[in-house]
Image (tube, protein in one colour):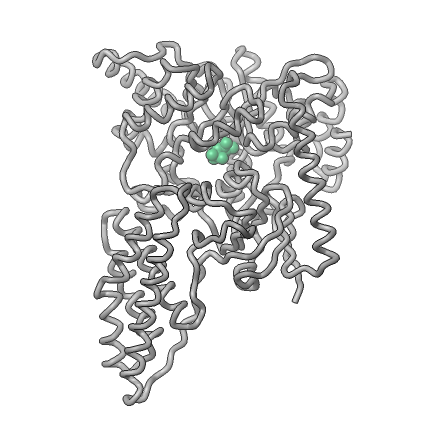
Length: 574
Ligand code: PEP
Ligand code: MG
């Protein structure tokens, strides 16, 4: 049966391929009592399910694609280890014998008991391993209930695959970065969640906030994913397929045409130069930065070096990564943001996740609370600064004392390097992210004490409008055009200009071509975005005349009528 689902298109383009269900969704567990004469049979069924699951995991381990990250084999080994543990392989058998319950129910009860025991562990990393126990048990349950699962790595590379998941974390996305999917769709998530940002970085068509896609779509269903309009069509008929194949072709032609702009000078029609920088998460993203012809890296989200691993990267390991990016950029600027962990980016070894993590120990707050961790990173960034044009960027500054403490920590790192006789750029620029209304309103102070500012509109909107950026249930309220947001952006840009300090925008607004003219009109002259969006934004810049934008922006800044917003933006863009 053909049907369509509607969500939020978070990354453009059209993909056509077969559904590949991520195995994270919970299985419905049947519960019934057995007559004594069937116990033996039930025990055999349980043992068979354990054997089938083991075989499944071993096949996966032997088929890990060469380009997959090393963590995957560690992950599979750990699951095999849990599967072999008597807590999972033996204890449910005792329950079946003693309570005469069915195998699924025995295993589910044992899983609950294990999770409760993990919950009591103090160590955050060990506590988080309960997720692996749950995943292994789910896998066995799927075999028992006749729905064998597939790890998202179980991929036939000859067929286009579309990943269908209830939810994907930014850490999951990093794992998928090297594994080819044509698109992904999820039930949860918002358009500026880090998962969505990573999808844009991979130029992968994606739709989020579909609510029940994981429940409605079956493995191997044929899907069309339209990442621009946020539509997913399940099992389309021939005429719809033909229509979308044509659209897909057109999209490719348009993307190819844009490549011609790579070498053209980035300036408005009246000759004002506009800096176009790229956002990256890992070293491997540097190729895309070069392909797009970016002026440099405006945001290197260094926290991605810390995800999907049990240990912390050492100073040397971090230094090598930062140096590699600086060298690959060949003298172009590289803005390394210090660790922004917390909220939706949780490392396994991190602190207990707070009830309200976006307002908790996140970003610079976490770094100041963990001086050893921060010192190591600061030394690594400073050491790398001798290999290129590195700038340091501090996330989520709010208070003046935080800024003072941060500058002190940087100075301490400098002193320790001098003591060790290690070289670094003594004049490395240090900038701050403006992501919280309090910081935007105090932008003058931050501009005075820092070398540059970068506006993180993803968080600025989240904190100004009190909308969790990763929560699909409030995604419709996430509004970059709210006059309060526009005024905070304009205020920050003006505060920087007054003191001659550069200001850029590195949130997702910078990569949205429908907002390019708006940002130009607010006075922005430096944009940083996912490389995949850069040429579309450049195309807008090349067509824009700054003076013509002023009257409309004034009206947008004051506009309180939501019905007029789209019309005003339209006027700005035509
Ligand atoms: C932002 O908040 O706009 C930003 C660029 O930082 P991140 O998306 O990593 O929170
Ligand atoms: Mg941010």
